[in-house]
Length: 382
Image (tube, rainbow, N blue to C red; front, side, top):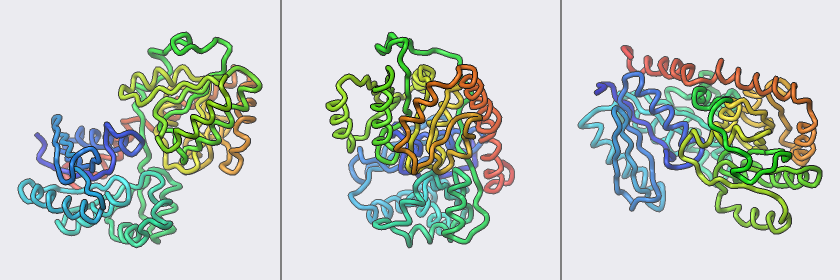
């Protein structure tokens, strides 16, 4: 067993869905591979308040703690429990995955225990924390007092610099398993999903919700369907808050073929569905650096995404994908139809370049090198 110990705090961790959960697991496992024992504590709504469940796998220990109704009770109880653990088996560093509350708690515990703390800004945590009803004061305190801040994109790093005045934000982008998400591998047949051979297969990956531009996606799909056969495959879940939106869409467009896979826990199944898509469409309104886009590009798919957050750091318009301005999302359907009419040779070239960028810049090996540099700051012999 490793003697160096790291604590990671996060609101989300698998089986939770979403990019925060998947990146927390990927980073935790990556740090374990560097010879550091990692405890991940995440707050669970599925457990009674204060109840703790622990699972262990080698050097990775995952602690679920039941949330209380309010954070002002959840966080003090978390501190009490973790202080007892730290007293018996001291941590060498603490990582907060998302700015508030995980990052705030990490900085507080780091100062209290006298150990290095790192805060990892992941996506819209800055955008949400800046505006009411969120706690801007706590956000500012976290940014000001954290010894180390990482941001998942250059765009997010610039926002943090404007808010805090700091110039030492480290960009630590997301990564993708390029050996699992590949252009070649098991692929579902169109027949398995009842898709005709002439249909244009549009894909959306992740949890469909407001910030992912679900209204623009559905309207664009309806527009495309009026011109040519098309299918929209949602590779993931639909958030309960937009169930009514989806119901009304189906009611207005009864002929529209819309496939919802539900949450897929097996990455191989996710990759198999991605390979089925002619075009992956991600019209987000806010983003950090979406794992969904990395996975689609690694699978050698053509992608059309909004120009928000870290997406332009991944996609070069017309070179390895296509961008559409957030203010132009009403024209998304037209952009999809323009893609459909492009020469097959151009689509193939763009898809190959997308895959190449992931292999060269966003693989797990590259992320491992960046994590190793961080670990060496916490543990000089790492």
